[in-house]
Image 1: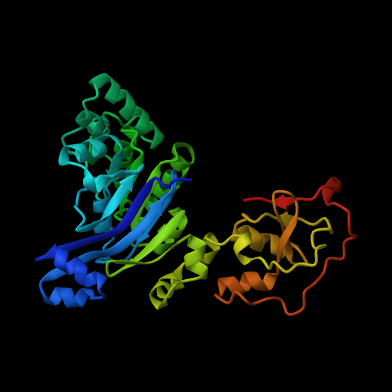
Image 2 (image 1 turned 90 degrees about the horizontal axis):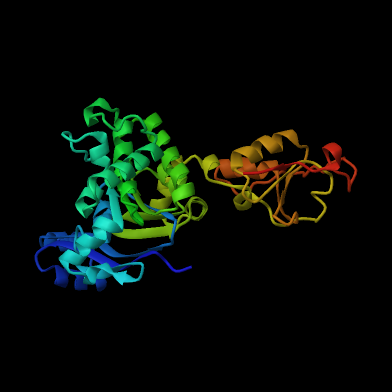
Length: 369
């Protein structure tokens, strides 16, 4: 599958003689060395790809360079060096006019503090991108209303922004991005200003929309739990550099360096791990023959725990062909929660049920994701 978005060796340097600063960075100079000379390296040699329909999360603390990186993806900030390609087109080589055309039709941005016009109705705010494109009034009203309905705001079209809660205002911002039918959504800490419950509701909303719309999304956050929940892939930034890029499970189970390891200490592992990531692949071959309930590789960790509590033996994991691919001893569940993945039951317990017989009505029950 060809990547939808590709960033190649991006640098962004603010201050004097930025090209010289990039060359120094390539030769191994650090951020502090450049800062002493009056130059700030905001992004250093950032490269990544995003596949169609993927949510790519960039995570880091304040000052890590994540928002600067995002603004280079749509040309709001010009890279000091490097390229950004979208659908194979080099955005860094476009003229200002060509770049504005791409931004108005192919790329939408959702901001942290909503960025709504207080003198425009909810409908007119959602339709603003279409207005910039020159879409006729009737059509942009229709498309804005459709986007608002998708975001759960049907019936609020004629309201004013100050009549809406913070979560509802953020939904208007999301609807504005969706109304243009842009292929790429850039979301800069879009949910960070919301209360925890509203924030989780917005995360649910985004994931639900993504099931049907399948947009390509780059999402910026400083919250690793949010990154783990939303991201198909996650890039962790520190001091302008991407220090790890991988799936949530990659980062949780195989952190690259002490910095990433310190980040994941407080992550709720039960919301990320699945049977595939915790199962023991060394099997005898008959663990699923007793007819007890089994799991699939995608069974969530929390369901595995509930299933393990009901069984006297390790949970068997079967693939889509009903082939045994692993088992999950109760000790491994406890071990992964305690960040001790090698833990296992000292004395495995086998099932006493007759082999070759199914469960209820002769059929085996399967816990599915």
